[in-house]
Amino acid sequence: MGLAEAAELLELSKASVCDRRRRKYAPGDRLPPFPTPAAKLQCGPIWRRAQIETYAAEVERLAGLSWFERKYPGLDLADFLPGLPAAPGPPVQREDRERLAHAALIEQVLHGVSSPPEEVDAGLDEEGEDA
Image (cartoon, rainbow, N blue to C red; front, side, top):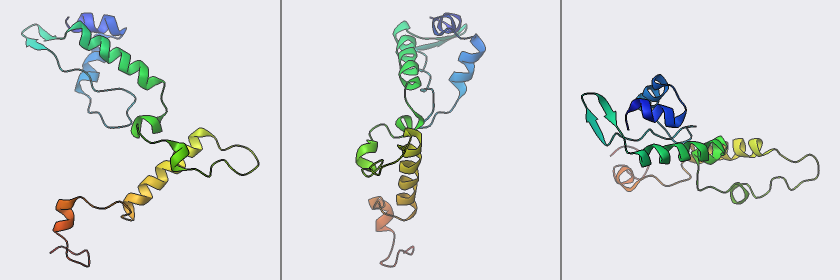
């Protein structure tokens, strides 16, 4: 199927499909990367119908997730922040929990709680300075 057929199947304009094809994607994005065409002809890119249907299903799946679930797909908030909301009072909203977990993950990276990759670690002396 060509660009026009893909746009029709996705219920998008052709311009929107072109924008999605050009876009760079990162973890946490609301949209998955657009599939690579099965072929590029002089008339334009060609995809298999299954590629576009799989993409549409992934768009729908991601739409049901929060930003935190998209960015950290394997992380369970209950395990990461076990004490929330344990105290009496208004419960902590899910979005607040996600922000706290995200901040904690950033804090771990900034303070070196997780060990550096082996190739980086091998290039440092005992005091953490470049060798």
